[in-house]
Amino acid sequence: MVKSLSVEQISAALTLYRGPAHVMPSFHTHDGVELDLIQGGGITLLYGEKEVPIPAGALTLLWAPVPHRVIRFDKGAVVNSLTIPLEDFIHGGFPAKITDAILEGQCLIEQLAQPDPWDNFLFERWTADLKAGKLLQQAVLYELQARLYRMSIHPLTQIRFSPLRRTKGLPLGHLHKAEQMARLIARRYREPLQIKDLCRELKINPRYAVRIFQKMWGVTPLSYLHSHRLMHARVLLASTDRKVLDIALDSGFSGLARFYDTFTRSCGTTPLHYRRKLQHHK
Image (cartoon, rainbow, N blue to C red; front, side):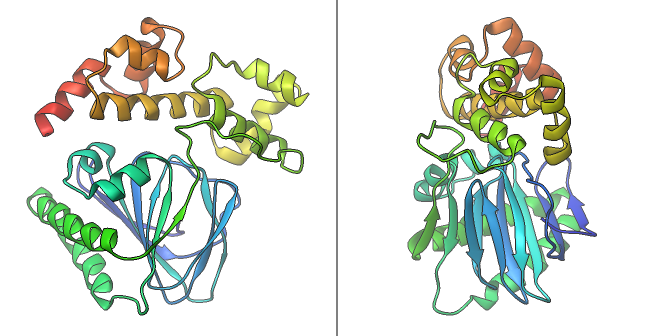
């Protein structure tokens, strides 16, 4: 969500970004859960199809695979953004009120009479801790656990948009073709869906569709479809004991072989090894 980012990263775990807010020309998606603190001025976020005003000092938590982008910002606004990996979010001991809402695709905005000045200190300390190495990463997770508990007992604005469940009745005619396609994928990725079927439905040439989609989103329609299916599968692998075949079919894959191939190429490990790693982590 920011420009000229400074990035502090420990292996593939917590990442923290800080930089001036700017208008994002296209939607942005990534894995995990995003915790944002805006300083110096507010921003307006387009979260799926909904405009979400976020005032300065309000803590915001969102499900990062949902398409989102900054469309307006106040002069001087700075974005602090911490990404929490899915496995840490699911097994990190965070309040069920928070985890359930986020895994449904919601965006949560804390509503306080006055911004909590402690949050500014937390993000500064987390930045320093993540620079220090793995030793302090667990401390950051403990502090996150406490902060999200406080967030769970405060009033929250809940913005509902779920890529994990189909939605109906949303007007599509006014949207750019690439946005139409992205939204249809988010609604129907669990179906035996093929990109050529979407192109036929939207009355668009498949080659042209790939070109405009990649220009807006930075990935092909097929990669975007796979990202939704894989994120759904990762949630089920992490949070249920269902058979891998059932998870593959529930996530929209045609069979086990296709699921294993796509999952392994994208995640660098097999679904079974991924589940075992999470069980060990837990």
